[in-house]
Image (cartoon, rainbow, N blue to C red):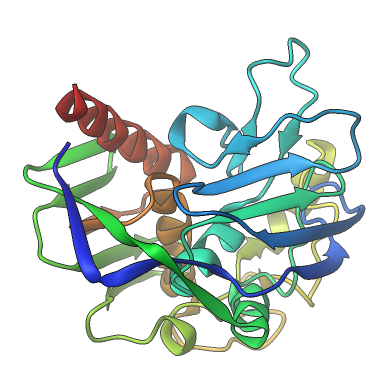
Length: 290
């Protein structure tokens, strides 16, 4: 495997556990998680504290079981697939942004709190409790050739690059969103101020249909940017908040493979294409390992 170990960068975990409570975006039910420190080489593990089970799921592409409007992981060991944890993408982005490698996330239900619709509340709590350096160097998977996923006009590709960069083009046939482009470069841009605070968004006209599908039952003006016919119902944090949030989602989904060095170029991609790309990257990683 083409792993790059950087001696000056050590693996990291939390200095202490944190608890986050709130509402779940899709089920609308109360949600709570405990995020706990974990030993070196653990990665990011999830478990359900509300179930009588010791199953722990690693956050990796093979664990993803649903991609409808969110990234859901689950355990194949459960024949009925009752063991699921929904909407992990914002938390995963915050974990990446805070530079954390090893954690155990205990979820008291099937979905994690949506907080304010961004990654910032998680990121802020991580920094408040403190980040603890561990004894082993952090590893990066360095992309050496182009890997891509495509679905008609939407696509995402990762190219070799000595760093981590995302160039995203958003294009909606809607007057409020339209077309926009934003680029985030880990080497020069601050995750906290540029990306972490960008919130998820939804369309007012789609609300009833989503409710019928059992989605967005916990959505409110406190946790999404709601888009009307000609303007947003609630104020935006950035003029281009929509495309920044798309980059946040890419970061969260790419963190299913841990630290990566490469340049991602995405056009109109969503969770399904992100995880398809992450799966292809993992296949390449395993192929090189063997």
